[in-house]
Length: 213
Image 1 (cartoon, rainbow, N blue to C red):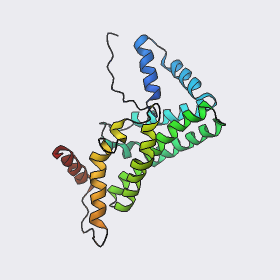
Image 2 (cartoon, helix red, strand yellow; image 1 turned 30 degrees about the vertical axis):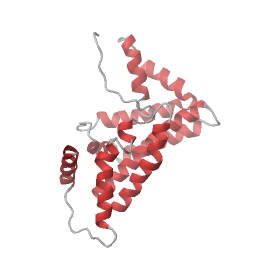
Image 3 (cartoon, rainbow, N blue to C red; image 1 turned 45 degrees about the vertical axis):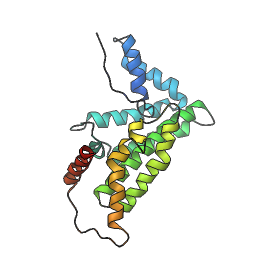
Image 4 (tube, rainbow, N blue to C red; image 1 turned 135 degrees about the horizontal axis):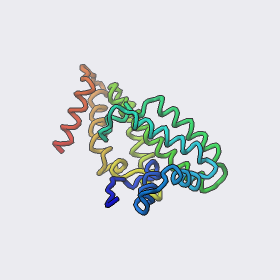
């Protein structure tokens, strides 16, 4: 190996294994990946290592088996389906039950809990926007921007990248806040929704908004 180039945001909730593995491989490209991940999960999660590794494997498998993944947020509901999220929820709960008392492992499992809840809220917000439920979309947006996002960003190390959690500069503002809040104003307080555009039109419109900005 001559060189290695990766894009990895400082988001330790779900990028932890990738960051650890990348750092190790840069020193030894012939590294045993499975053994290294065994070491990571056992050391990082202690008694909760097994369900946490399964948790990450469910996520990795869903992405690997996807028909496509462009990195676009609109792909996520097709990859992180309710079935996938339910499986991840079960393994996370198992890990929480094993990491007991006030140990470092409890705090580390909680890092994933915050990241998981952030994902659940985002998926719920996107589904609400798609279904033209502006009230529910705003509730989920507020949950992201006022509760989960700030908690994730304030954590040391940060659990999500500022690109996804910063209300003023991040993608939440650019792609969602500027969509959800105007939608709520236009469809409540005596206003009425008279037509529903197909989802693909919504995707086009939101991208045009981003370009215009």
